[in-house]
Amino acid sequence: MFDAFLHAGALGAREVADLRFFGIEGALVPSGDAVVTATPAAIRRGWDQVSTAARRLRRGGLAAWAALGIHPRRIPARGLEALLAELPDALGRREVAALGAVGLAEGGALEERVLARQLELARELRLPVVAAVPLRGRERLTRRLLAALRESELEPARVLVAGADERTVKAIRACGHLAGLALSGGAGPRGAVDAAVRMVASLGPEGIVLGSDAGVGGGDLLALARAADRMAKAGLAPAVIRRVCGANVIRFLGVDPAGLRGRGSSARSARPSSR
Image (cartoon, rainbow, N blue to C red; front, top):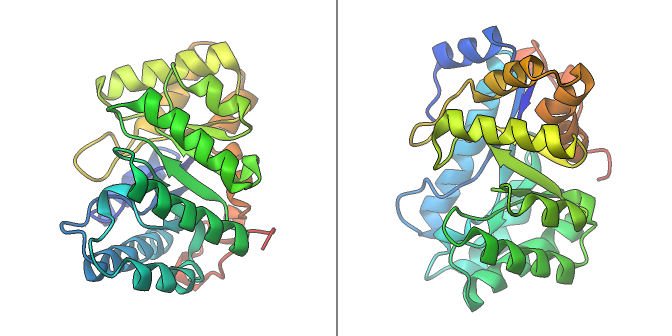
């Protein structure tokens, strides 16, 4: 199992051991809106913290990668151009496998401009993209995000849209993107897990990715393991469970977890094969 959305900055050795005990073997650690102030210095520190968290997970025996980007809730009022100029170097770090999380938070010209710049960068660097939409205004912002992704001319299969739900998952998949279902959400962990199980049972595993979205501000660290158990009890085939609980996102990232699993920080990073 590979957790597609794990905010691992505050996780200690005990939590990492719990993840391994319950069968979580890898994770993607994305940038988010956890930085306190939207200044270039704070965002740079946030990138460093995400990279450090991924390396710490590796030392704990998990196959972990990072995703870095400028989150739409943390666009700085000053110094944006310098920050965008530094982003390619940050994305070149050995533990980084994707750009993200980027996307839309409220919408508007500034958010869309920053999103377009980062999507252009991802296309130039041939990096997969983790894009996200918030709970509030999800349907409207998903429509706008999908339009922006279409305008970017990125290969659709190279984009994972996090924050999908029962109302948006079909539109995301119809555009050729992966739909990321968070297992911690407004309905509570159990409700989010149940909703994800229903969607997988109804729609099948194609283009669906599950992640706990845990680690910052609560969330269930073991939500992915619980979802896998719930799907098995619901009679879903093991192959279906494997795809949505890890195989789909691993293929999307283009990484080889076997090269890191259990080998700690001394292992060489398996970089996306398309680069």
